Length: 175
Ligand SMILES: CC(C)(COP(=O)(O)OP(=O)(O)OC[C@H]1O[C@@H](n2cnc3c(N)ncnc32)[C@H](O)[C@@H]1OP(=O)(O)O)[C@@H](O)C(=O)NCCC(=O)NCCS
View 1 (cartoon, rainbow, N blue to C red):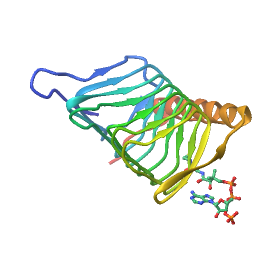
View 2: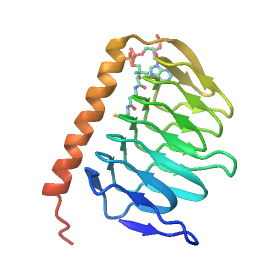
View 3: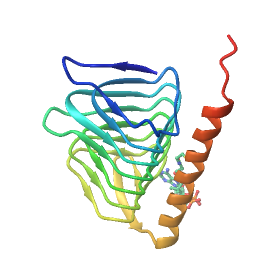
């Protein structure tokens, strides 16, 4: 991975992450907790603001995580962030799933156990309660999810943790 200090601020990466791909770029004020899996092509920029990623969260290929000057990004535990998302200066509580290709903009909070459908655009300063199904462009609260959906989110996050361990063990660069 490509880890950069920005001025005197260095990323803090748990030695117990599951897997971080070689080409991932991590800059500045970034904390990554144990059990996380970060797939190829992810960029995490903590420039002048902090980014925290909680344990057993997976960030899938091509996603960009950034902060705003007045508001960092906090991603909770057991989150699944799909491919090609933009996560920008917002708070995602625990057990949140962000569908493939979604954009979450600044100062927005997404409650515990929520699911954001693929291709959603979540505009600035929104506050979604726990266990929300959120869809659309711009995204809206569609309905409240049940505990089964939250269990599924945990299962999915655990599955990606297992994939991360497999990648750590079996991935070999061949050219
Ligand atoms: C939102 C989601 C969970 C719905 O799945 P589902 O319950 O199987 O729903 P269906 O596919 O039967 O669709 C139900 C309705 O929602 C609509 N819909 C489904 N996904 C949508 C999305 N992402 N955005 C907007 N509308 C969506 C469908 O068009 C359909 O509308 P209709 O009733 O008017 O025909 C799923 O489509 C999704 O986006 N999952 C995210 C998966 C992902 O990216 N995970 C991260 C990587 S692991």
